[in-house]
Length: 147
Length: 131
Image (cartoon, rainbow over all chains, first blue to last red; front, side):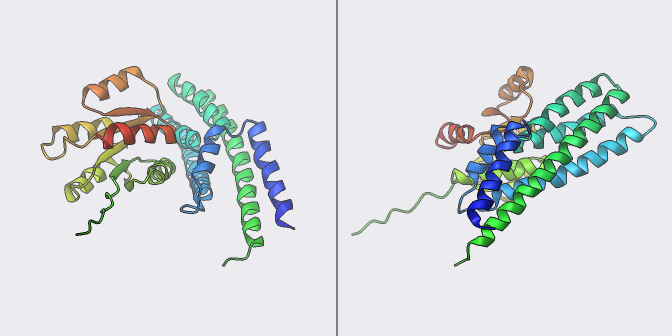
């Protein structure tokens, strides 16, 4: 596929992510930090976010399966996910983490489990879109021969 | 006799954050403002770096970290005769006035709310390093 068509597909995907509320303007701030001195900055941060988020979600599942849930510990993992979501502009995941922390403060296992399901769905939806975005970027780069 | 202008060395910033995502973002923000950056993932590692490298112009640290918090690191720096002149800037995603006041009273130069923006870094450059 020609570079122009791929670029338009990429723009449509990213615009859709903004329109769906998955991303906020922090993601644009990251895009602005990418330049010739750091050409892969966005893909580096997005990949770190996806790996770190997956680790935290697995840890949250493990913590909430325990007979005696340590809600302070759960809260500290949710705080980590909220922080990295805010840093990449993952607005929807960040907002769900805010709700999740309220259930941690209420010591509500049911509330935490329900919000974990929600945050997991939102995170993997975002991750799939980020992966599609990175794939399109790679295809676009491959259209231009390196000098 | 000709004179050559020697370029000023880039200010060296020690960035401390337990989150790899946040470390990567803050490091890029600082580098894009022409700082030389060393990143570490804990207050303990920060103190190790500071014991080896006396040429740190600013410390920017996350507040909420396991074991040694950013506040603990700030106190350790301000209590040290060798390190106390290094400006320390705290960062947190939570806008807690009590926490901010406590850090400023303990000698922090500034307190930034995450996510940190390029405008925050420009402000730091003007206020802290160019002092």
